[in-house]
Length: 466
Image (cartoon, rainbow, N blue to C red; front, side, top):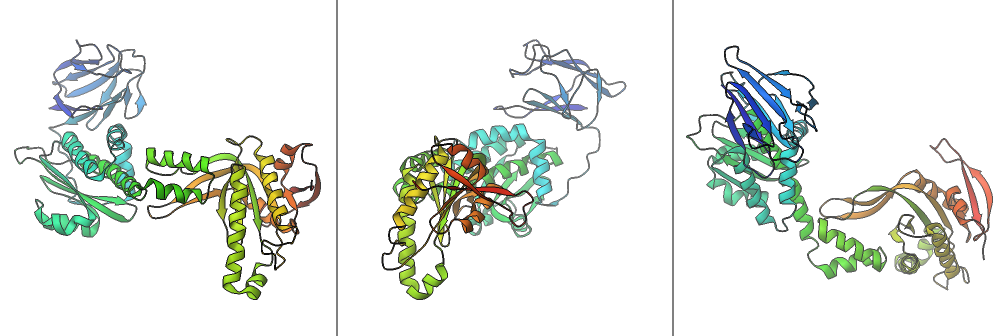
């Protein structure tokens, strides 16, 4: 006996017995299998089952968007075999031969990256729906209940619960098979029996929770490999949801978060970041964009620290950071504190004339120090400014507990090493920055430099004082 297991968005899984002869599939109500999907044609495809020969074949009925068998579009009548998957739009039809002996699924399967990737890959449409539902939920208890309901819907299980790691001691003893659940936790493995599955919720090597499923004992069909894959795929999405909720919980206080952001970005950018975080549950990740970066640090910082001591040196750095941040924010930039200096970032995509604004910021920083050579008038401190423009990876990196603004790329490394040509009180610009300055900011070619580990030389320019 041949079965079709139908998976579609927003509807429970269906299992249909394939009838002898032609089974038509499409959007029209007169089809034997009606596909409610905008990508399906009225009469999209048909399956021909011949019991006397025990053969099954698939034919596309000249549909607009095509019929796919195991991810490949078919153009002619194609024979089918057990475990084939047909896709029409966003609807999956899995073919199963009930008379064929299924290889037994292993009782224990290590929760490896390969298992997760295979499960996610084979059930991407299912995960799309699961993600749609879970990503709209803003509190963790509701998300856990919804995850359990989705598993019941897709796997025909009688009971399902999702237990967080901090609740193991309290709730594991109440499970259908506590010893099997503890084994899944201890080994970080999927544990499968005839009517029970325990699947860990993993984030990398960290165990976040456990999904517990029990199928009705009246169901004769045992769990198959595809059932395990569905459970693993949903557990992967559950892990992402738990991580998102954990991160969201760290920023429930709007005022605290807003004050924190104001230390690193301008008020306008702080508002944008907070709105993004409130909507998405995380700060923007790394993306490629064109930026202008500015580096400046205090020269001879070790000597200063030696003569002034920790407290005096800290006061100089703090004053430098505060003034640099105030000037950077004035021109719409973002600041990152370094050991003895700062990196300011001006987005060319959101700031008009970012290169010129970076030069103005550099000039103001130099003017603030140059009259006495110091932010602390009792001692001579020297800085310089290097500026470079180009493509970089820009965004926020980190985990649940710590997130940091970062800019990465060759142009950033070049700008950092250009600093050695900036002292005392010079502004040195890279070639793309200099080209954007035009005649508004006179500049002269200083030299061509070669940086260690970089094959191509770099022309650097001095932006002349006003």
